Length: 557
Image (tube, rainbow, N blue to C red):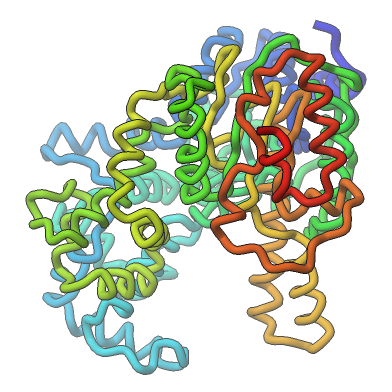
């Protein structure tokens, strides 16, 4: 492959790195970071590299790309082999996903002295003064605080007696042994000879969305470190992820800014919004396209929603074209199994209809602890159970139509990575990360960046509460990043139906309020994806010339 000057600079720098040296690479969307790392490994055949990946899917894909001097693993697999495997030889147990609120409540009742001491120490927080012992809000606060510890690089000694006792109970198998717990146990070792003695380099990919525990492990080892990522693709803070690129004390920072995926028009849009709305402190480095006039020969396409609500609404719209023979089920692809997308709402609907505990899927059987949908909604909001909150909204909106949508979605294809020609992929922006398509439509349920920025400006001008300023700034950062990720999934054609599109396209924004139904529905015909080039250009011109997006659908029918 023909390497760019930026790629050559990175390869040359790595060749002179010594043990303990630290390099940071800011790699923009589609800039070939994985191929660059492959070339780095090939240029250093006498060195051993440990490539840490986020999940098994990335591991499986990376194993086929890297040379033999690179070992590809997840941090959890390292920790499992060191912590869990030896324990399982002595004690038979299963690793669970997480502690449930009910399990935690039962345990806390038997440790009430520690629990009440914890609540008393927290009483200075006004939000916690009114709590009753063992109410859901208080139990959830303990669970969130303990999860925050498990996902931090803090030492155990820094924790409250209650949290240290919880950890001891997990070690003694009195509480469920979780994935987060054994990863934390591995990090607490602080000494990792199985890494330092075997490897010369650690390659941490997707460093903009890494776990603080993982970063603690990386910082503790003595071999050379290379962190690679894109600060503007940091979109998993809600899961406790951090952008390690902002805190990593590197000896040098190098950049990959040539986007080989998107044509110049799409790159220009991405640059515009990043420059205007990114409130972070890192310097702006604009992208440029490696295929400025690029048009794709294929016809892979995606409809990207901000939320599962928007995704299900989009699928409902696609069903109209299926019924009319304009599309077929095998032309519709989900990036996640419909069972995952619909499971929360299906179980909420069952509960609403009076289902017993045995009739619900095991993760949702606790619903029957509540007497009404309103009670469940209150619990979900108090415990920040966003999945359940969203599921309730879907049930309130679609009701008994949800099982019908689900049954039809099962006739569609499920694919984790890039799709073939002549398909429409349905995905959320979070699930679309790492994917690319010839043509992309962004739905209207994305947040309006200008509105969030205006809120931030007003808070700063009026000297609003520091907490509100911080949370609004974080919201602007995350929503800008999510919009950027979604935009840069497109190679050639982008239908931007978000509230942000009119700003870039030079159209006057409508002052009329738009309800959620309008924001979540499609405002173009999906079969536009499959039009021949000559007819497509005419249709695209109509899209561009139409000032009000609400009329686009009618003009294309």
